[in-house]
Length: 236
Image (cartoon, rainbow, N blue to C red; front, top):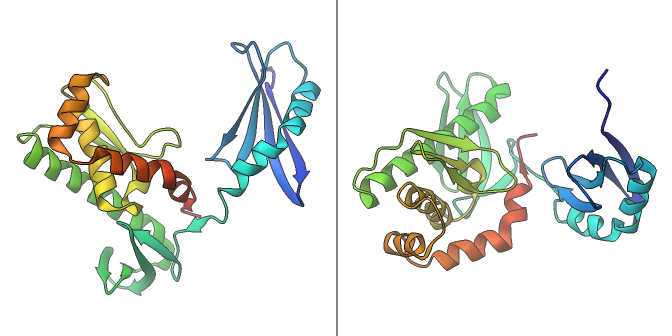
């Protein structure tokens, strides 16, 4: 039987119950505390020879920091009919419309999601997001990268990076970027497309980025200041 290498506890701090996962890591030599933005819980990593009780005590000693990270992820921004969200940096309202076709349209600051079945609201909208990001990526590749062929465009759900690429000419773009100003998503796409030429972060790479996209610092700053806003967006 496989030995369980983690325990989950709850800690009450400032009248809020915070879930903390204590996990043993065979590579760790010391205690480490982080916050899991995907699962909305504190995460304490401990060496495999340390008991869970000690790990939980370490979590309690650091609950102030865990709490500060936790409250930044609330309230969640739910993608659902009647709710409001920023799409391409502009505030818009979700509206459901019964229709034979699955369709998303933007009209008068409204995001109108059409489908036969209201239960398909989120799936129809998410498919639209994927199509928009893929279309935008291909457009940027054509206009700014001499019609660069991209083998695959993946839509990612990462809580650690906004874009990624590999040596097989494939790139990944996080779906939440569609809720940022358009120039921010454009910057990330340009960044990853530049990596297909320069697979590093050398001066040559950054010069290439600058030649394709002006004011990269503005996109970087927006993401630094608004990352948690994007991470709060949920499909539940």
